[in-house]
Length: 232
Length: 269
Image (cartoon, rainbow over all chains, first blue to last red; front, side, top):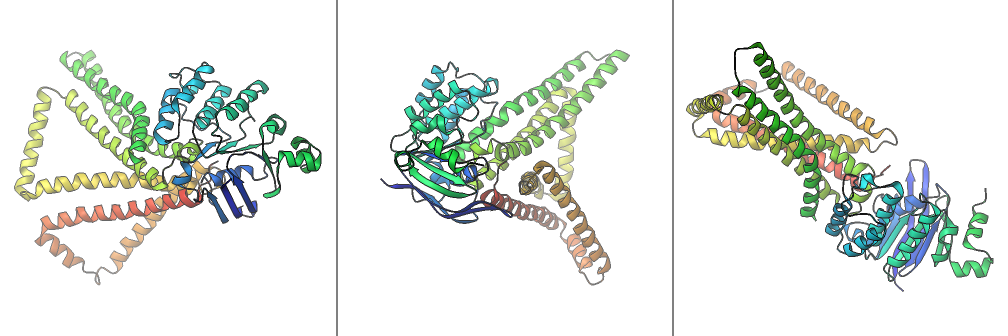
């Protein structure tokens, strides 16, 4: 499998604070990867850098051989951990927006998923509940035929029933040749869909293993190992 | 991509701009209808006076709102949560800035045209005829003074105004972008940057005046004044084009500052 995402000595500093401390990482295509760590460990900083929303202080990051920029943005589908849609738009308008800007966006798939949720296309985003807004964001991201999906805390703000919906939406709709990076601290809920996990602590990668390796080597689930590694 | 950015930028403006302009045109039309019932009564004077005041306020609000929307749109679409979508589109920072500034200018021009249309509506009839006559008379006098240069002057002034408006938007974008470099209270910081620029401008202006006053004997002021007197028409062109050039240099500097901040120092909250 080819290397999709590569980081070399990636450093990010905010003044005196080091958010990422010389990360080296390679991710191959066709995997679902859990980016796991407590709050403030550097997950969101890393994700922002992959998406070109932050510049590295040092080191480099490449996606399919390109540094973050217009070329990588065509290939990366990003779900931030906050609601980022223009609330005055209707569902149809935001679908048209995505269709215009992303060549890999599949509007039919998006409409089919909205229909399953009984969200009419003419509905304004500001009239949707918080949970439905988050589902709309996820549907838009997963309706892209991207090479890399980056999902920042996709299940943090939703109830347990909705978490199942989010997880099934991810596994049913992602491009199988692509890599999905899911950042979360709610490990038990997503453990069953992960191929690989990365533990990040104080800006350092402290573990990168497949889920099977963790079970074999440590005799623990990912959730149990996480609790052990990040014990206060 | 630029075309698509323009399309969605224009759509975002239209939802605010169209109702505002419709209200302005409605007030102008109402004002004109009121004039049809002109009488010498006190009631008419009050109603007519109120409609004129309302119309004047509406014009100011319409132009002001369009200008403010141009600034707010830049901030909201790029530096609030919406920025997470804007900056993950396959679009460069330069394209974002150019499209934002040009769309803001486009709607400012459209607002000015609507203001002229509303004036035509409210003065329709005898008053409009008189106003048109006065404008033609004024243009004829100016033509007698400056000859065929008049059309060139008008074209230059229109271009200069557009450049000045564009530069003004880029200046506000610069203040907002510099405000983003702060960790907290970024909007407040942007306001502080604005007043900082204003203060710097005043200080530089004062220093400039002091230099001219102190060194007036050593500066070729008299020669410049003589040259203006000898070739007033050419001098006017040079002054207008000079203003355009200075504004364009300012716009270029502001653009580079905003682009650099977005490209290298972006850090959405």
